Each structure stands twice: as structure tokens, then as C-alpha cells.
Amino acid sequence: MRQNHYATKQMVTLPQRNTKRQNQVTVEFSFWRLSYTVVTTFCLLGLTAASGPGSNSQDVELRVGIIQRFGEKSTAKLQLEPTKGDRLRLSFPLGNKQQTIVTDKPVKLETVMQAVAKPVVQEVVVLGTYRTFETAEDSANKWRSQGVEVEIAQPERWQVWAKRDVYSTALLRRLLFENLQKSGAKMAYIDTKVQKEVPQISWVVNGKRYSPMNLAISADKNLIRLNKGEKSGTGRVYAGRMALQPNAYGTYTLVNEVSLETYLRGVVPNEIGSDAPKAALEAQAILARTYALRNLRRFAVDNYQLCADTHCQVYYGLSGATSKTDQAIAATRGMVVTYNNQLIDALYSSTTGGVTAFFSDVWNGEDRPYLKPVVDTPINFWDLSQQSLADENNFRKFINMKQGFNESNWDVFRWNKETSLEDIAKDLQKFLRVKNSPYAKFKTIEAIAVTKRSHSGRILDLAVKTDIGVFTLHKDEVRSAFAAPVSTLFYLQPLNKGQAELWGYAFIGGGLGHGVGLSQTGAQNLAKLGWETSKILQFYYPGTKIQIFNDKIKL
Image (cartoon, rainbow, N blue to C red; front, side):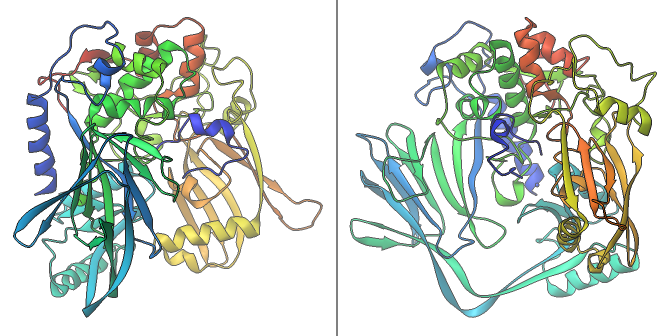
């Protein structure tokens, strides 16, 4: 959904990283909230008391998918290890009983492709494929309003599926699909996979091999090391427990069951960086807490809540935690951002490019009153009410300004990327194939043009003229369709390169990520200027307030 700020500092050398279930989440969350201890003291509690794995304070427990599709490759391996002087406890069903094995040795999980006596057919009706959860959720709500029961999945990109336990037979799925086609749903299709072999997880303890479909892992010290390589003692350490469980795609997910405050220890340093000023770290901690509590529904289809990458928040366990980030988490313990006593949609991104955006500038759905265009400067020198960035001339003037912004010294504040028509076509064809678009069959691109911008300058519609016709990309589709732009805040400059015909385009723009809500880069600059945490949050989310999370705050 958003881009990791801390990782983008090395963008030159590293590649860009690119929900019955709903009711269940609501019930479970209500239970967790009842068990949540409200902390009203804002003093620093110290590393362990703040959020350490040994803390005695009650807390909301999260289920985070840290390895989401384990088993996609037959060579996939993971190693779980106890920390020094500790033991792993492995629990799994064996027949009608639950068996538990204790070991102080590393446990290597391996994938074995097992032949099945009868081919396994996995089939779903895909109603749409999307870049982000937000756009997928808006589409899902529209289908529900039409009487179609759906669920949101993420086999790779986000998808809206006809709910599998409702459309549970091939006949029901085909009847639904025929009705969809008659109603003009061109992007819908039936995805059928026939598997003659399926991935099975196996592991060995004390010379004996086990292959359960579900596995619960815990440790006496409540710490488990996850190692993707062969060398013991390396890898990331996670607090809490783990569970290996099947998912909706025929593979497995490794889930970390961890308390909210401990989870934040693995988010804050990896999102904004441990060197950020105190006020910026505290703002990030409050937002990360708010974001997690509001987004527990994301992976209901797979029986967990959050992921560990930029589709949610970057979470690397306790690896990277520092005293400075732990202090920011402790100082803000229990604090969330609300609007009208409801958790806000705590969206944030790496770099806004000088102006934040409406929610609807990037995704479909209703706007949030607190998410609106804000010129990202400590002293505003551009009046959006007089110089709207929906005007192309105003936009180009704005995007060529470089000084006076909170992000002026950041390497992705402004960028210019030249791309040939050949490369643009390859990226676009790949995107359209994933979308199941009939335009994926085009051979050549004749022209590309921005046809509509938002008040904040984000591209709302981008038209592409090809040899088989003209089609339009909308909002966040633009970032998915092309490799060059890392935001939708850009304009196109045709390039001939000395040739008579069009060679390609320069993508000239600013920012990294969606640009909605807080800028992690901007927040750091404001903190350096002496702005307090509450003032920074009020700047990016006007009309909101900071509260201690309690049962009266709505989701």
C-alpha cells in the first residue's frame, strides 16, 4: 500500500519493493479489546516494561503473516531456532490427539511435492485484480451491494473472489460467471488450477520426520529465530509464538502471534529508521499502532490479520529494534489517532513530492475528511485554492520547484526517468494480462497522455493509444502499469532522441508511494524544526486527535 521510507534511502542500489470471516474478525477483536489494559501514564517504562516479550501487561495480540506463501517453490526451506539456552516446543495434531515435541536444536522446514491419487481442482471466480487492498475492498463492497457474496484474497496481487463457500460447486460458479458476462463484467474470469501434486511441509526432530498440515511453535523465552539460510544463529528474532498453517492458495503461511506493543518494535525502526528525531519516531509509533488496529480484516481469507511487507507495514521482528525506537513506543503506549472518536485510516508514505493527497486521488471509495491535500512545507508558499494542481500548467510549475519543501533534500523528492516505447509496452502488456484485459493483445503504443488530474496533481486518468484502440488507466493502476514512475505525481515528456519517430517518454515527477497522509520524510524535517508529535500529526491529519485506545473508540 505504501512504500517503506527507511529502505528507499538506498534506492539507487536496491530494487523498489513493490476478508462468516468478517464477523469472526469482529468478534475476536471485541474480545481482545476487553482484555486490553488501558495505560494512562506517559512516562518511559523501560525496554522490557514497554514492549518486551516478557512484559506482564495485557495487550492486543496480532496474527502477522511473516512468510505468506511458503511452498510455492519445491526447494523452499525455512529454519526455526531457539535462542541461546532455550528450547522450541512443537505442537501438532497426530491422529485424534495433539502431540508436542521439545527440542533445543534448529528445526528445518522443507517442502516436498507429493503426488495425489486424484487430481486436486482449485477453482475460483475472480471478479477483479488490483494493486492495493483499498481498491480491492471498494470493489468488494460494490459487488456486495449487487448481491454477490465475495472475499478479498492476495495470491500475488490483491483480488476479489466470489466467496468460495457460497459458490461451492462448478455449476454455481459457471452460472455466476455467465450472469457476470451478461451484465458486462469484462474483467471477471474463472481461474481453474488442476494439481497432480501438492506441496507438503516436512521436518525432522531426533531423527524422525513429521508432516502435519498445522504446526504451532513456541519457546520458553518467548523468542524464536527465523532463518532462511543454512547458517545457524543468523536471521531475524521474533517475539511471541508462531503457527504454520494452510492458506487459500494451496501453500502455507508462517504466522507470528505477537502482542501489539511488541509488534511495533519491529515496525517503527524499519518504517522510518532509528535515526529519525524523537517527535517523528513518536508520530510513526502512534500511526503504526492505529494502522494495525484498523486493518485487522485484511487477510481474513487466510486466517491471519496483517502481512509483514509494504502491503501493510514493514515488520522484521525484534531485529533492528533500538533503545531510541523502543522509547518512542513506550512514550506513546496505547495512543492512537482518531476522528470523531473513530480510528483514522492511518495511511502514510515515504515521500509526498511536496503535497499530500485525498484518499480518492489514489483509490476508489469515499474520501476521509482528515485526508486532504496539504502542501508539505513548514511555511506554505503555494495556495492550492488559487493554484490547483489539477491544472497542467500549474502542475508542471509546481513539480519543477525544488526548494523550501520538507523533503527538498531527499533523493526521491524529484525524479526524471526516461523509458523507451519498447520497455513501456512490455510493462504495460504484463500489467494488462494480469488484469485479464482484452487490450493486453496490443502490439504497439502510439501515444500516452494524462487526461485528468486531481486537485493535488495526482493522475486520475491516463490514456494510452495503441494499434488496437485507446484505453484508460485509472489512479493507482498507473504505478502498476509502468516501471518508471514511483508515484502518480508526474507528467510525461515525449522523446525523439534525434529520430523522426517517437522513441519514448520521460516520466518527470516527485515523491515515492501514494502520498496520502503523513510523509515520513516530511515528518522528520518538521521534528528537526522543533515541531512536537501532536503538531506533526495535526498537520498531516487535520481535525484529528490523539487518544488512548479504549472500548469506546470505533473501528
